[in-house]
Length: 221
View (cartoon, rainbow, N blue to C red):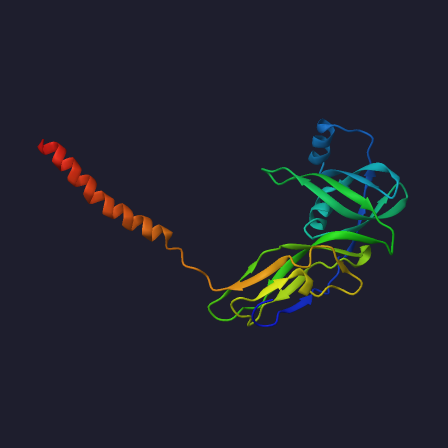
């Protein structure tokens, strides 16, 4: 690290556990998926730990609220039983951003998982500098029911030239960094003025009179 010591701390709030009532589905295909979404439900699949995949229909509004958070944990209720699961992937329509499908992984209490945790920057660096977030997430191995919602890097008062790497970010107790320790997370620097446009405009202004003179000479001939 260059410059002042990095002040980095963890976000202590862990992912909340939510409950969703799901329905097992036996029909598949794009047409059925469209009908599900029209009925305010979202197709999903639950898999992991050597179990047979279970195809589910999740309640649309509750699921939408759930996946607004990173790495949400959910207790699924279906066919008279419950199952703890981690939202592994959310597929969205690239244009409308409507949720098209959700992948869920079976969890067992006490097990560890590898997840990408968002990094947030707080505080203001030294006057005249800016803090640039280079790595928006860090991969960590952590107990499934204790996934941190964020990792927060405090840049208050840090000076130009300060670099904070992944290895310097304090993790929650029991968590292990999976990302490369040398990964640049935040860099503090003095913003550089973009003089390219001004130089191009000056060059264009210098070329214009020369072109006008050439055209005048051609007209005279």
